[in-house]
Image (cartoon, rainbow, N blue to C red):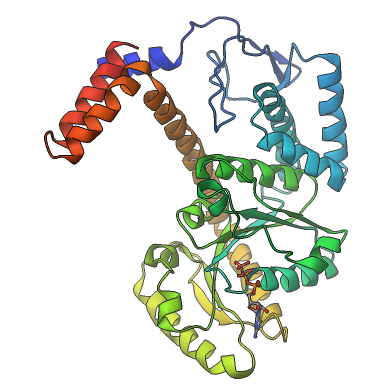
Length: 403
Ligand SMILES: Nc1nc2c(ncn2[C@@H]2O[C@H](COP(=O)(O)OP(=O)(O)OP(=O)(O)O)[C@@H](O)[C@H]2O)c(=O)[nH]1
């Protein structure tokens, strides 16, 4: 096992440790860029072979003049809150172009340093509030975000809305992006709305959303709403990148609620029963009671907060201020207990490991020895000729022996 581990390391860290230097300059790390770092499709993760400290590389030595000017322009524009610079910066982190990916990482590191300084001044507390919102198609997500967003910008907040659209990964289509959504909020100067990239794996979309959150916060958005539709694994990915996870449920019959996964209810810090107006008030109350009982049976995720179920209507505005009050109460409780900071720290680790998993898997699947054997072994496994365990062992052996 140890030998396999060493081989895996050798494989991923080849060619050998040369060429990448990170130098400390007045508290800022500078590094020379990878002639020797590998960039993996679907990820911007470069494997730097020698990173001498945990600090960030802020500037890359071999940036050309135009590249340096572009990064300076984006950074200055971003931290002074210009929406165009924020949009351009997010486009940069979404790119598949290898060199631009590298530039995006330089920009991100700079923004991270800026944000950490802001947090330090804020007594170590996060400056922005990240809220994930999920619900089945048609649950009323965009209507809800529109009214909550407008209310918050009216109170002086700056609100960013990012969408994670799982359909764009599988079908190339879009569940969230095609129709015009949040028309009023999109015209609001204190709001920034960004749909998810139109292609890529969920891992890729997750990474860019995580990075887009950092950029939005750098641009001064103190509330970042991350929306996703309750399809596939995207809800879990969003729950892993936010401070608070909110599930929106329509007052619909059993069949329409079938699609809501039990696992995701366990992740909810708040459940909002939407469209609680007119004839829908009665079914909304019923759903509220059902979910309140269901939540009581679930294990608590945090010490300082009990998940709650509330009703609201985006059409009549009833319940909307109360929903926000609950969100603020959650944040205050989680901040004062330190659990929110702890959750963020844990998320950083989850994010790192999911990038590693995706990249390691990519290397494995694209290794010539694996590619050559995989279809035959897959066939044998599906026909029941060999066990999945044996097939996995053979593939791992082929991979490690030729790495
Ligand atoms: N009665 C009532 N209808 C609502 C309310 N909010 C949204 N709707 C209606 O529900 C439908 C879906 O609303 P959206 O806000 O587009 O829902 P969504 O979850 O964003 O939908 P997708 O974009 O398909 O995921 C629309 O016809 C809305 O008019 C509400 O508070 N009350």
